[in-house]
Length: 90
Image (tube, rainbow, N blue to C red; front, side):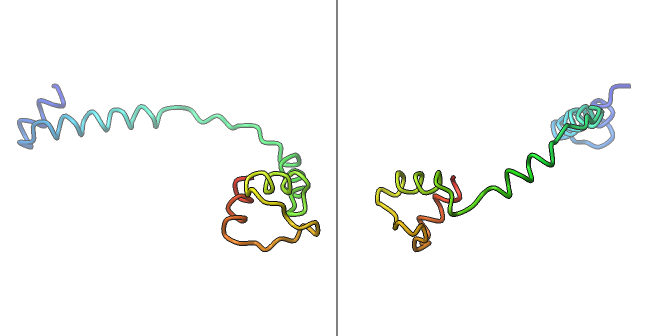
């Protein structure tokens, strides 16, 4: 027996029942995809994260270029909203 015909006859819902059946079919297809565990180099990621600093020379160049002004030589600028936004983009 066709599920859409069954739903139409018993539930009185036409298109919504067909849409529901189609949606459940699509979701069921996603649920049957086998999980494949990915490789992640935790040591490399941890080292890269630890190496990040607000005193980085590359960050200083990036901020100078994007802010359109020279930052103080002490590299301890006033961290206003615009500067912190560019730091987040970096």
